Image 1 (cartoon, rainbow, N blue to C red):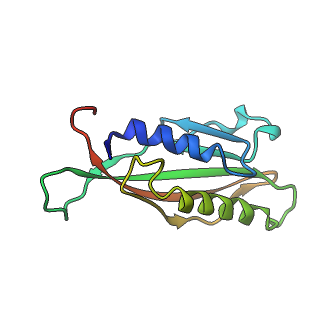
Image 2: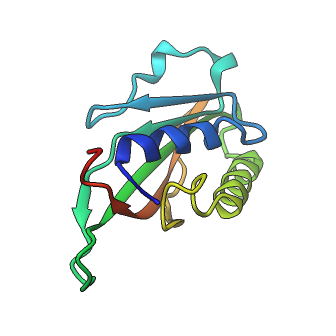
Length: 144
C-alpha cells in the first residue's frame, strides 16, 4: 500500500461519485476551486475535490516516508429557502458514511477520516459547506 497522491485522488474521486444524492464530482487545481457559475442547477449537489498540499509526518520514526494530505471537499447544493432546510445534513451523512465504509480509499491509503465540517455559507439558491479529510499514506518514492 505505497502509492502517490495522484492515485489516491483518483480513487477518492471514484468513491465520491458513488455517493447517494451527489450529482457531480469535480477536481480543481487552483486556490479558489471551481467557478460555480459554470454549472447548472441540475449539476448540483456537487463536490469540488481540490488538489491538496502534502506534508511529511514528522512523528514517525521508521525509514518509510509517511505523508499527510489535507483534502477539502466543498459541497455545493441548492436550497430556495431563506433559512436552510435540513437537506444538507443528508449530504453530510452520506459523505461520512461513504468515507467511513471506504476508510482505506480502495486500499491506497493507511487511513482517511473527516476532521472538520464548516458551517453552511452562500446565498439563495446556491449554498456550500467544506468538509476536511485527513489522509495518511506511505509514499512510494519510485512512482511519485
